[in-house]
Every structure is written in C-alpha cells, then in structure tokens.
Length: 116
Length: 113
Figure 1 (cartoon, rainbow over the protein chains, first blue to last red):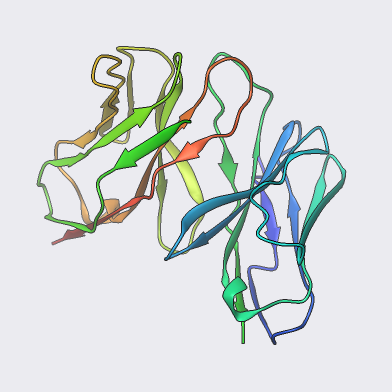
Figure 2: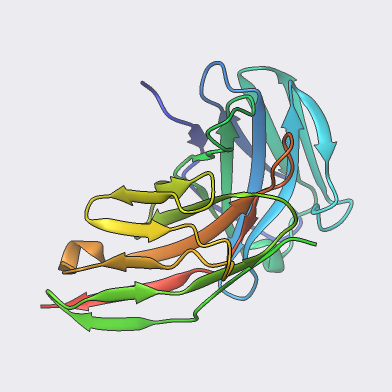
C-alpha cells in the first residue's frame, strides 16, 4: 500500500519567495497533520485536519504560514514569504479514525526546506 | 496538560549491548503509548505501542511495558545492532476520542561495531 506521499523532497529557495509543500495522505485516513522538525525545537505539530476541516492550527508559527486541504487526498502547506528561520524538515502525516488501538500516525518521508 | 519526558541522547553503545531508553509521561486517564523510530533521512515510523496498563508492545526485538503505577514506558532491547542506529521518540495519545498526540524530544542512538 502507498504511504503518505510528500513533494518536493528537497527544496532550496531564496528568502522572500513563496514555498508550497504538498501531501497526499493514505487513502481512507480521516486525520492529516503537518509537523516541522528542527534541531533546536524538535518535532512540532503545526496544524491538523479532520475530514478536510482544520481542527487546531495553534502550532502555526505566524501568518506567513497557511495550510489547506481541499479534498481527502490532498493538502498543501504554504509559506509566504519564506525566511531563513523556516529552514527545517516538514512532515505530513495521516491517521485513521480513532479506534480502540490508539491513534497510530503514519508519516511521510518529509520535505527538506532550505531558505537562503 | 499532557507531557512526555525521555532521556536526552545521544546514546552510544557497542553492538550486542543491552539498550534502555527511559520514557515517563503525564496524562489524565489511560492514554495509549507509542515508540516511534526515525532512521536517517526518513520520516518517523511506528515501532511499537501499548494501549492499556500492563500491556507489552514488541517489535524487531524491542519491547516496552505500559506501567501505570510509575507512568513509564521504557524501551528495551537485549542486543542492539548497527542497523538500530536511529532516533527514538516516545509518544502518548490521550484516551477518549481524538486529541493531539504528544511526542518526546527524541533520543539518538548510535551503535558502533
């Protein structure tokens, strides 16, 4: 089965440019998450969706960041304008509906962003 | 609020050594507990989990037991291999419907031949 698919895998961009990261969750999963990982802050939850609806975006660092989920099979995380401190690995992840076995989260391989 | 505390690394072991990575948690009710592993250049993947007290999760020679009395979920392996070198994350998921999963800071393990 296909896992969570992210693109691009690597992105190098100049400060001030717009960056769009894309994600295709696992088919049938109801939850989608965007995480950011850095050496300094570790793994941070930015936002998550349930059935395409944003539920909690309290982790989004500032207005430069936005996320959308227009349908069950696609989501984007956009940074506009980008800054060097946004350099990080951005993970998309998905999870099936809550069940008795706990909320196992399935991660993509990440998008490695460098802003110069 | 919910929190997960795990030992900071890096942890360096020789091949075939015994591994313990400590994890304790704070949460109300009966959360589910997880260990995730991240190999270099990859995303996190589930290693094992336990959903109720006294359950033991196991996978690939790793084990962890859900201890309600000590609020702990320590990861152990009897004999590590070089291929186990990775970052290990302890995590909890609250009980009673979906809520945010809380991850620990991650512990880097390096196994040397």
